[in-house]
Length: 337
Image (cartoon, rainbow, N blue to C red; front, side, top):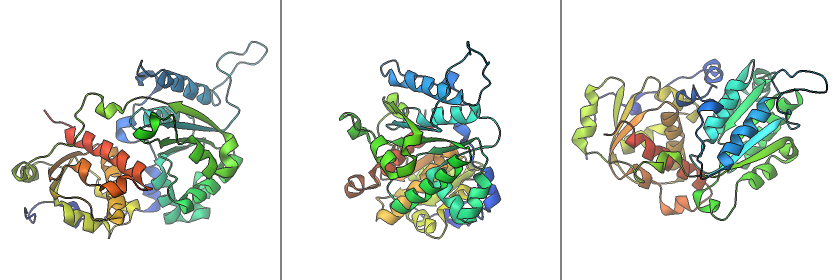
């Protein structure tokens, strides 16, 4: 086991993130700052991707000016205030949602489901409603259905915002093994949001995970020397995996964004399977923040795509773990020769 004592470590950081900063951070991640419908690349083998682009364009037409009279130009605005993009991992749902955000005028917000629930937790429900009210668009990436309490909280919040004229864009993931059976997450989504279900237009997107189209299926593994050598690079941390996982228990997930602030590369030593569900879910939350910040990972020990046990991948949080695996593979390949 390598001993890490002299390097900058994530495990030494205790970030403080105030609610104002949390609200200001509700914008698309850096890798989607330039996401537009025009630079989305549909897979020609999956026509639903090109169809999804047109669906987003039609939804966005509700904000655009239209000429009056009998011969009005442009696509007909949608009758429903919500757009739900449903599909597997890496088919471009986040790109399309970010493109929709860029098309929306005025004050608008973009965040993951976890970020919105964390905002409510930090501000309180009433204050969160006041903050978000009047926005032209609330974009929710990776709407999660595995926590009934959080799902109902978001359903109530969105209901109030929609009544005030706010429009909603949302995505969720369908496990890859369900795609071949023609099953999507839309039925679960529409059931759980109950009274809002009739306000969403559902768009189903098929395809392969773009992060794996041209990449290996497994996370890269580095030796200890390669990981420790990272300490000489700016914007780098080096942590022993077990110590980092333990440290995450002392930091609220809403503050994980502070852990990755300014981080370019994260080195991990002695990676091992996660001991339990609680640790795994915290690690998933960190993975999401690392991925959004476009952090490269150099890790030794167990491949990072194997840290979630078979029981976890077969359980109720499997979609979270599969998404994290997809992202971990991509981050370990980032910058690799």
